[in-house]
Length: 221
Image 1 (cartoon, helix red, strand yellow):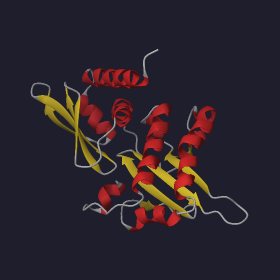
Image 2 (tube, rainbow, N blue to C red):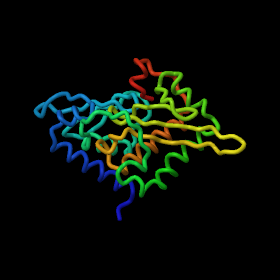
Image 3 (cartoon, one colour):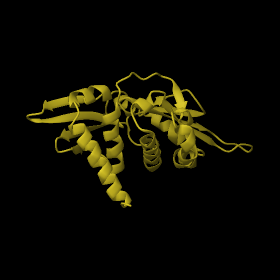
Image 4 (tube, rainbow, N blue to C red):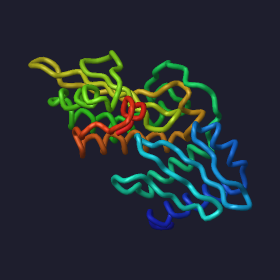
């Protein structure tokens, strides 16, 4: 069995090779990104990820990102898989839980522990910190839960994060929601990693200064 890091490197390489063989202009269109260049001069796909500008260059398969935290190998993999799998269908506006995603019910206990429990640990007793992402323009108010926000993670993969505050009788609760089109853009395992990554980033930063872009570049971080 390969070590985890080597597995990640292999997954990234396979995704790059699959994209090299694809119509990158079509991949850009379906993913909500933008295409630059051509096969003779080198092709590039530009994509927004949590409000940041990413550029994937082919055939090299390199990635450059606007200033901020480095994009981890795990993040690169699910973003590449997003480019590979994007169907181009519009968002439905219908929010669903992880267990409602095809195949999600079986993996729900893992998802609940890695994503929703982490959300509650961080914001269950500090929901105003989560609300600050709305008040600073870095997220939209979802209008659900005691605090609910919508983050634009990738152009066609928004994430809904909800917190219900606890009291003397009940513990705080949290929920992570997805647009019902999410399985048209990411495999199930990548959906887990994406949600886990976003919750971790929120927990790490808590609140940051709002980006200098209209509506925080449609809900980026």
